[in-house]
Length: 267
Image (tube, rainbow, N blue to C red; front, side, top):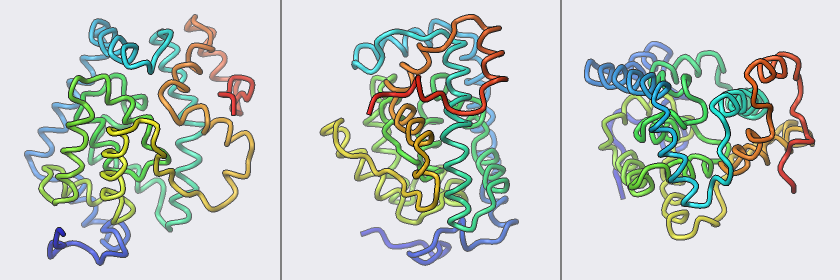
């Protein structure tokens, strides 16, 4: 058993819930080495936006794993990610943070300070391996299966994922301090580690779906959106159902105010 470090909160509360705002900001930013690493990740992600060959290679690996059937265009991926963000990720996060008594706006600021790439690339298709792992470790996910499927873009993705989560549990990960200022539940990394191990043994194992105890999951439209965007294959199929022309995608995005249930994954 790993003994808690002297600066950790009690086992039933996270640092995010107990520390003051200035302390959380200081930890989220980190020291010079952490800041330099963040800037390098931002630069690599921006380069990937222009590297169509790398994206094609990643999609090829996902095709080989059976996670992608037909490739969406870059425009479909981008606007599909905006729909995932506005119809599932943001409303679920707002409700969850309200339940936890956490300021949504301040929490987003901490996330950006810990890793700005998590806001640049919501799909993960343009992120490097460490950025995706860090993103999953910094936020209690509604459902982490999408990200584990995404990690299969990299030849050693799942093995590295498990090793990094184990390092977080052990308190030896280089981002332990900054991530510890953000993650909302103190036992999240242990639960995530258990799931990563189960997923590697059986990809069909049940994921640890985050509980939403208020009204959101009573809404059939939200449930349809969550069902669609919960998995990588579901997200990609949704993207492929969108228009292919950029102008049509932009007009649709401006006019659409509710998740289109006719594009949802079947129950």
